Image 1 (tube, rainbow, N blue to C red):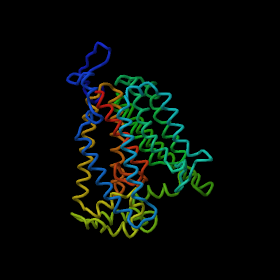
Image 2: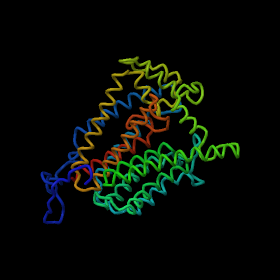
Image 3: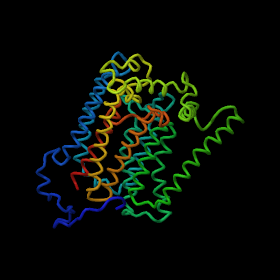
Image 4: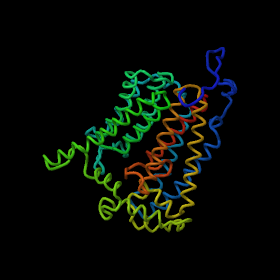
Length: 399
């Protein structure tokens, strides 16, 4: 198994597999619903959710576009989803690669349906089924399961270039589908999940480096071809203007502080004004007065940093480090490669979103609409995070 040492396993008389030192089937059946999930992991997530609810509550005060009760409802629905995924034996999903691929495509393309599809903020990313949902968020679960299912078939060793290209094609399908909306931020999450699963699934380093080089070359080619379109047709065809502006602002934050660079400029002002210990709860003037756009969602870290300062930001980062480390331990002790890759895919998703969300607020990453796990406003996003936590718990319970 790439990156981890496999635990010793023995066959039970019934044909099952039990890891050395792990409880037998009779002992496992006596456990309560949450007894098999590390209490430390539950405590970490409880602290993150409580911290997030506090910051979101302060961010939505006086803003009619957001409802704190909906966020609380999202947490409640998320806990139900977590229990459901925890009770599910994740091993039953192994091998359903084609089915998972079909589910991914159906989910991601559903916003294009004429009756239920909803366009918002220049992207066809939502559906309305009595309530507005973002299928691309829910597809993160199936993307992780799809990638893990594909790579688990190779037993931790992917040396054949043809098989590598086949695995890469499976991973690329959700990204290509999400780009039809287009939703570059979510697409990058899919790609990062795929990259992590490929690395942990035994893909050769040479193949990974070639793929990375090809991806960078493709990005350069897109910009070059778009410039040709601009010169010939008078407008860009491949990238929207706001997408180009975000990259230009990332390269030069001071280029247009009142226009394309406004979001980044206000975010850094809010974070800097928090100082060491912050201004205190409900005293985040930058966000409460509307200077920071999308404060409860994409820029929730700015609200936290302005209210609780550098110390409050360190607490959040400490909780995230503890969450990642706890999941890594679960991945190391998984009973099979499929379980390990599922947990590593979840880690990859959380890690990318943490680095991208906080990084864009301080100018280290381009501005994208990527929320902060267990912190940002959004019931769909909260439900997905809890569901993935339940999936991690299922892997741990069946170690």
